[in-house]
Amino acid sequence: SQQGEEDPQALSIQEGENATMNCSYKTSINNLQWYRQNSGRGLVHLILIRSNEREKHSGRLRVTLDTSKKSSSLLITASRAADTASYFCATDAKDNTGKLIFGQGTTLQVKP
Amino acid sequence: NAGVMQNPRHLVRRRGQEARLRCSPMKGHSHVYWYRQLPEEGLKFMVYLQKENIIDESGMPKERFSAEFPKEGPSILRIQQVVRGDSAAYFCASSPPDPRETQYFGPGTRLLVL
Image (cartoon, rainbow over all chains, first blue to last red; front, side, top):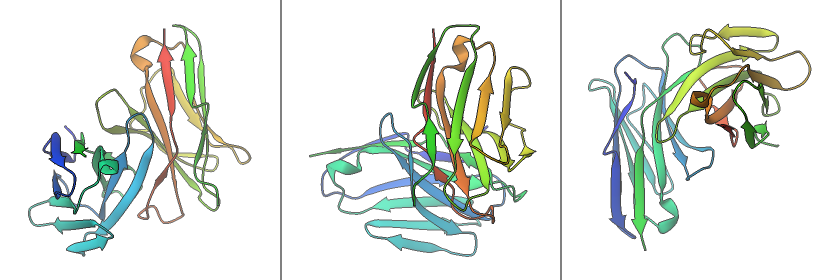
């Protein structure tokens, strides 16, 4: 099964609202990354949080990491229609090869 | 600094043909990763290469698939005798020498097998 699992699988909100997506994983990690993918496009890197960090901010994005619960959350504040996309968390394999293990993703729809 | 480049962006092949997908990493990046994304799914790791070396191919199907990253030129993912189940988006990512750093993804190649 996938290392990372996001929930919810799909989320629909109104513009201006906050969106929270969660990710759980199974094994120990060096870091966890969040990516965005617009429909039919490539992945855009959003933020990387290391295992010794608990919270990180980037613009309207806030990421938390709880290694004791093996979970992470991505919060998008004051959402915009342009935030409509799929969001994936990815954890690195502990073997330090750098390969990423992705979850199934959360599809976010922001209605104008 | 150009990002990760992949070509072609779209590729149509008939069953039994060969597909060649190319990836040029970001300047200064020496690690290349290939991932496959089936419709409505997340990405799955296929292979990790450094120049002239395959480091980890644990995600590659045992038959028909091969990858290389020569000393000169792009990394190539080769699929021989394609079948309909190979239809997917194939993404390449590159990272700097420390594999714990951020991976940057290319736009992907969307392969359609008829």
